[in-house]
Amino acid sequence: MGPDDAAAQHRVSVIPLPYCPSSVPRARRAVLDVLGRWGILDAEPVAAIELMVSELVTNAVVHGRPPVILECETRGDDFVIRVYDGSTAPIDVFAECPDAAAERGRGLAIVKALAKKSRIDVGASGTTATASLSL
Image (cartoon, rainbow, N blue to C red; front, top):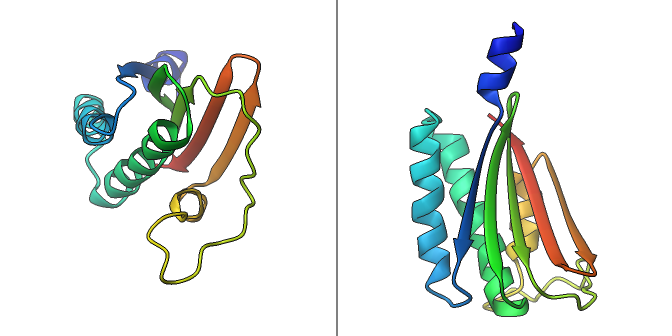
């Protein structure tokens, strides 16, 4: 791979989202549009990316604070998803798993299972949830 190939493979799309539940389907549509424009069409990674975006944006609008921003990036063979929100409250990402009858509480576990790497960072300007997977 030459230097031009590496530059062509590094792409970033930043998508501001409203702080409301309708951001979740909007984020799914936006990431599918980005994937299509970037020629990422294989069904398995597309489905995993769509699900991870859905779970991370849901967490941002349910547990976070505005603003909510979705960022998609390609780095070589990896697709990186970042969801920012304005919450500075500490979170327990290793909270106890919900029981089988619970309707909520599995989002980060799903992301962790699908992702090559995932993490949550809380800082002075907000929370960033990051997940990546190989394409």
